[in-house]
Length: 231
Image (cartoon, rainbow, N blue to C red; front, side, top):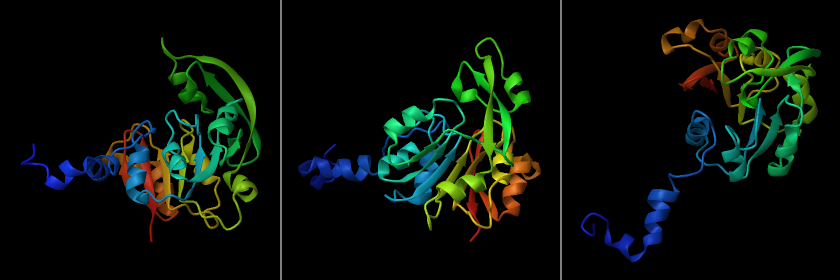
C-alpha cells in the first residue's frame, strides 16, 4: 500500500480523507440522485435559493435537503395537511407553505394514499396507481393558487432562484404554466416526465413547454428531467 499511496498521506492520514473522501462523498436525499447532479451544477456553493413544489418531507426523497445543510434556504410547498409541521422543525430558515399550486385560484380535489409520496391532484394517475400495496384512503378539497402569486408574496425582494423543483404527480405542466417566466427565471428547473424514453422527449408537453421558455434539457433520470436556462 505504501508504494501506491504517497508518503505525505501516510504521514497525514487526514489529508487523504479530505482530498479523496470528504470532497467527493456526502449524504444525499433525493429519490433518483437529483441532488447529486445539482451539486455538480452548483459546485457546493454555500449560499443559494430554491423553490420546492411537492416538497413531501424535509429529508425523505428531498431534492433540497442537501443544499439546506450547505447553508442554502428557500420555499417549500406541499398540499398535504400537516406536512409543514415537520418542515418547520427541520427547516427553520425556510419559508414553509401548506398550499396547492394551479393555473388559477380554485379549489382542487386532493387524493391521499396510504403512502404520502403518491398523493396528488390527478384523478386518473391516482386511480391508476392503486394496487395491492397502495390505495387511496380519502380525498379532500384544497385551495390552490398560481405559482406566480405565491412568489409575488413570499419570495424576498431581489432574490434570484437558483433552482425550482416540481414533483406533483402528473400535474407538473400545470404548475410550470402558472409561473411568470418573464419575472421569475430559475437557473435550473426539475420536473417529472413519466414514462418517456429519450427518443420521445421532444414530443412531451413538459419538454416542449420548457423549450419555449428558453430552457434546454441538461439531464434525464428515471422520471425527473433537469432543465437549464439557455444563456
